[in-house]
Image (cartoon, rainbow, N blue to C red; front, side, top):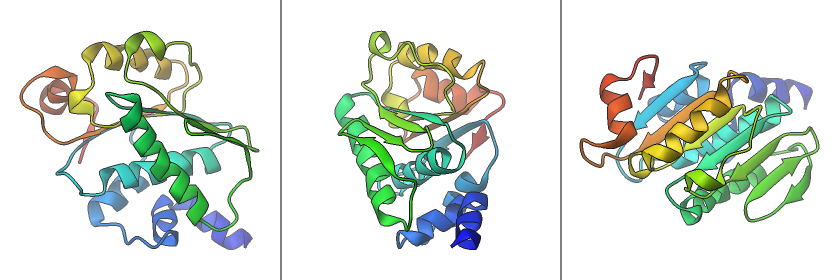
Length: 186
C-alpha cells in the first residue's frame, strides 16, 4: 500500500492508469513535467480536460495543503472539469478522505482544496497561496480573467496550465502560444 502510494506521488501518469486510462505520450509529458507554465493546444476530445483533472487531483493529494483553482469561460464549463476531478477521485484506491464535497469544491483531510470558479474576473479575486490554476477552454477566456489570476501565483510560485482548442488569432491564449516566453508548449 505504501509502496504504491509512493509510486503515485512520484508519477502522476500512474493515477491516470489507475482509473483505467492509458495516457498518450503527450499526456505523460504533461503529467510528469515540473514546468511552472504549460500551454496545451489540442484538438477536441483529445483528453486534455481529463488529463488536467488528474493533474489537479494529484496536486491536491500529494502537495498538501494545495489550493487548486479550475477556471473556464463559464461556471458550467468549470463544473464539467470539476466533475472529471471528482470522477478521478472516486476512481482511485485509498484517496485522502474528503472533509467537504459539493458541486463546486472538494476539500481533503490533508488541507488541500480544489475549487471550480466562474469565468468572471470580478468574482475570482481573493485567493492566495494558489498551488495550481487550470484554465480550460483558455482561448475563449476573457483577457481580464487571465490577467486577474496570474498574480495569485506570484508569491506561491504556483503552476499555471492553460488548455484549449484553437479559436483564431486573438486573446491571451494566442499571444502566449505565439510569443509568450517561459511556457512549455504541448
